[in-house]
Amino acid sequence: MTYDEAYNYIQERSKLGSILGLTTIKELLKRMGNPQDRLPVVHIAGTNGKGSILACIDAIMQDAGYRVGRYISPTIFTYLERFQINGVYMREEQYAGYMERLIPYVEAMEEDGYGPVTAFELETAIAFLHFLTEQVDLVLLETGMGGRLDATNVVTEPLCTVLASIRLDHMQILGDTIPKIAHEKCGILRDHVPCVVYPDNEEAYETIRNECQSHQAPCILPDLKELQMIKSTLNREIFAYKNVNHELALLGEHQIYNSLTAIEAVNILRGKYDLNYVNIQNGLRAVEWKGRFEILRQNPYVIRDGAHNPDAALQLRNQLIKHFTNHRILYIIGVLGDKDHDRMLKLLGPLACKAYVLTVPDNGRAMPAEALAEEVRRYIPEVVIAGSPQEAYHLALNDAGPEDVIVAFGSLYYIGKLDME
Image (cartoon, rainbow, N blue to C red; front, side, top):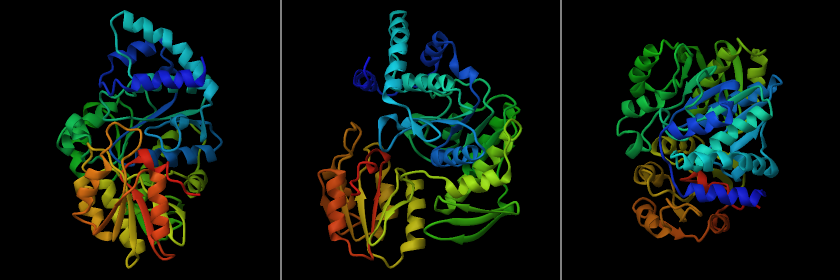
């Protein structure tokens, strides 16, 4: 099987959409020999910040000399970005080989009345197979949506679980209140396995605490009384935690909170891995996570941020106010139709004088640019419809002066397509 054949196969499977539930993925993994049970795993769920927390853990573990597998979604640049080992994407020939091995299982299962096997279930199985084949030292496993019924929720004994920031998103599936959503996210908890919780989860915390108690799982929160903010620049967040100074390459107070969550998770991992505070310092200083208040150039500033729900929009708004008050701000915006784009625009719209809007390409959930433009005009005086992310970027760049700021946001699905040359 060639890579193109394998990729076309998964694209056909993607037309099935998301089918929540564990019966099919468990049967597939059983027929494969349950590779997930032979891997050391940190499992994370949450609304925002999952990738940032795992990026911090990844960088720390790599600094200590370990090989770290990461399974992430959605991707920004390329399909195979979702399967990484120490930041290196799975090779095309590897992917084709894994797919060729799995298709007979899929066909046999469906003949036996299981399924259909969705794209995400198949990708999850490939991720476990890849990490076991490559004998990684640790797997950082990110849920796709929710937790309880997410296809990743098949690991019986993770080293620890992590709950990132829990906010309102995917409400039509996960519930219309934060406690209901938190209940779904807590589905990844396991008996007696420590759970590290993002420190700003007040509305979700009672649910999280009760779920941890029911699993007799230690519930670990970063101690904000031990946090000292020192300095915030467009290059670094500088802070001290438990009397240790840190420089964080990810920007924003919320990213400091994400890094504290990562630190506490790493402290749990110290029981199995040889780690020290220098690895933590070096990792946080070097960590990269594309598309999260990522500054691509200056004069004018160009920033891409994957903010796609109101809480993420609020964090982006705070960063723009902190660093770019009195600057002229231009937006590039593309959103998915099932997101709360109106609340996002209410938060961010008043900061900008002009917006370039687009239809997120190659996504059936994308909101058409014309409809998006009508919404944006309620908050921003001048709106231009662009035919592609690249066209939007070049139009904005031609319009911007050296002191201006261009910000692309609204969806992770398009910001990697911006032409930055």
